[in-house]
Length: 304
Image (cartoon, rainbow, N blue to C red; front, top):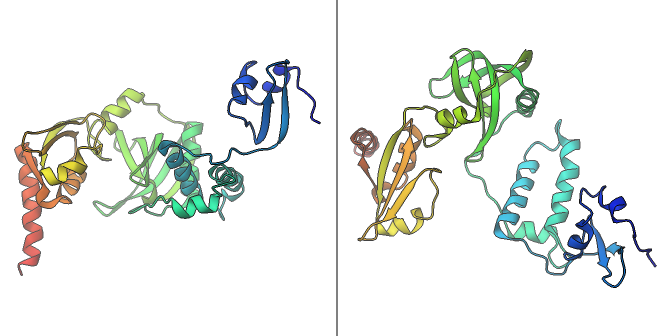
């Protein structure tokens, strides 16, 4: 027979909880893998054997977060340098996903998170980037800019890591260009941590330059694109989030008009074109001409 725990403060502290945590936790009937039985007629709790709620389920947000974490950890080369650190956490996540009625294997088999277009990156470079970022040290990187097919060596002050569309980007102050830049981590061919303090950039400025416009490309000269989607496509687009500052409205004919800010139109044009004839650029005129030119160029390849 387990003994009652009379001193709440003594055992609640190791569980990172307050004096009142045991009664609150007892409403869930579990804590740290052990059952808590709260006796209202007497002061104290009892710790019972391993216990799981039958039929325990998660909200859509919770299960997406757990599966995403599991997916990210599983793809961080568990046999590489991070293997020993990743495996215990991965095991805990797997345990959280499974219950008596819903074992982890069944959850993973029935619910999937698929990534499309994610690029591979070198684990040692990712580690160097992450270490310099948190230690506030500068990096020397050899970077392959795919757009120009140029390789440059530059000194950067890392500001933050950004996981965007299943790929990792390093937001950093580039001392070569004397400005903020976003670097694709998989395009870093070499990374070396310097014993020099990184330059700090305020979060507000980072958001202004790297987060104010559409997509991953940087810039603080913002324009607004007005896009109109057909009634058929509107049923999907109306529920999509293109940018945190976007504006949208459904028109009388059922079409959907979306307004998004952008500083560089390259990624925006790609996303517009994937909708084909279901999306029309209303303004600005320069963007409309760019999209029309891209469609004409593509059509010319099929008219030969």
